[in-house]
Image 1 (cartoon, rainbow, N blue to C red):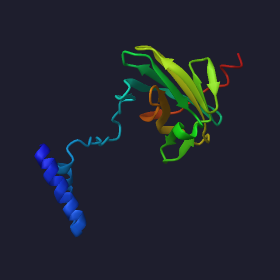
Image 2: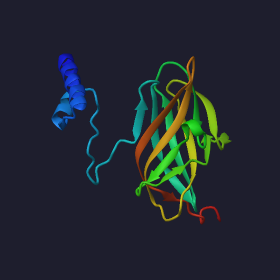
Image 3: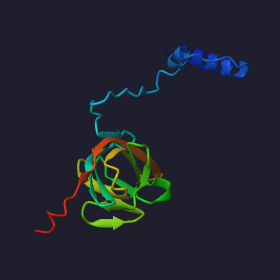
Image 4: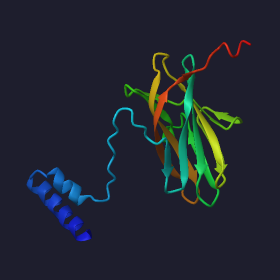
Length: 187
């Protein structure tokens, strides 16, 4: 397969130089390591857990709730590795901000980030993830009340170590935003 890759790569470069058109069949043959994105039919569920295999960190949506224009999305983050991981999660942090998208492809930037029930910040929070322990990271967004469905949350983060690395993980299939009832609070 390695020989096919080298030949296809040379053919692709030669085709580009000569202005020839590369067919999709050649492209598929030339790039066997590119992951294929599955086609999702309506009504089919997409897994909500995603794993950053570089660091062994999993991200799973725990749903979104609304109180007027404030939407809170919870993400469960678990260190699946064997060592502690120091990590920062971003809200308005320019290098690794967190976004959410609605069904019309509108993008909303997180206004705040909160770790478990303790620490809150408008830019970023820091934590050390112990192996096997799940932490809840809560992102707050300003989203119009007319938006009731969300497609995905794109979590921005930075792992700290000898070399600090910025990462992004998109968790799809958020679904319907649950409306928090004011009647429960008035009792």
